[in-house]
Structure formats: C-alpha cells, structure tokens
Amino acid sequence: MSDFDSTTEPKSIELNLSIKITDMKQLIIDLKALLKNNWKIILLIAVVIYFVSNYTEIKSGLFDGWNNN
Image (tube, rainbow, N blue to C red; front, side, top):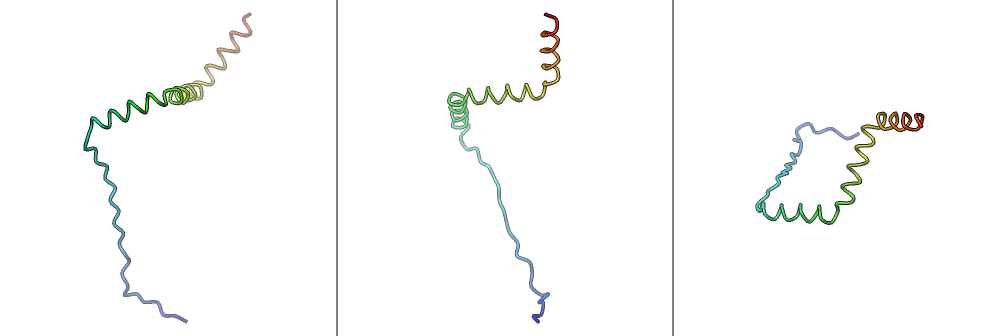
C-alpha cells in the first residue's frame, strides 16, 4: 500500500478575470453595429419573452374576444 504524504500543500490557482474598457467610443460603435445587424433577432427575443411572461392574460383575452362574437 502507498503512504499518504500529509506534508504536501495544495496548489493554489490564481484566476484573474478583469474586463478593461479602454475605449468607450469603440464600445459604443460595437453596440451600434450589434443592434444594426441583429435587430430582428433582438426584437423576436423581446416579443417571445413578452408572450411567455403574459401568456395567461393573452390567452384569456383571445378566448374572451372569440366567445363574444
């Protein structure tokens, strides 16, 4: 059997996560390009989130409108 060496120290792992925004102008340009190129997808995601969060109200409104004809 092997002996467990209790004198070994655990290895420390250093993790540095730092976000540096050095050029705010470039950030604004990138955001504008993102919105310009992907506005349809962003709008679709917003509409889906709206319908999911208000499903019961939309469903009851549709049924009320359908039954009142």
